[in-house]
Amino acid sequence: MALDQSFVGRTYPATDPYEVGREKIREFAEAIGDTNPVYTDPEAAKALGHPDVIAPPTFVFSVTYRAAGAVVSDPQLGLDYSRVVHGDQKFAYARPVRAGDRLTVVSTIESIKSLAGNDVLTVRGEVRDEHGEHVVTAHTTLVARAAEEA
Image (cartoon, rainbow, N blue to C red):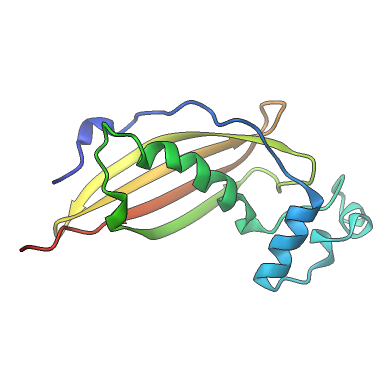
């Protein structure tokens, strides 16, 4: 069953703040195998003009993914999450995510398309810090595979 096009433009409330910690950044950098010292050494980050360590560019996915959960779990949308695969991810940064940031995300359904019986849902996540400053915009594309015919 195709998703309702009237949901395009629907915006969900801001998430509770997510506090970015140095240790989380270090763990993430280590997990992806990125040894850039700007992710682990405050002095290296300060030498490049940052107030503290910064996060690798894909770190923010862990924050926006949680926010997109409000969209995919919306019972009115009717998305069958058991059939969903991650289609694409894009980030447009205003500035790097930094240790100490308290980030909130507002998610908006940007588009819903039907392709070959599959529903393709794009969610935009606007990430702001505790001062309301725009940090990054994330675009997450999810594909709900068509149900198999019996």
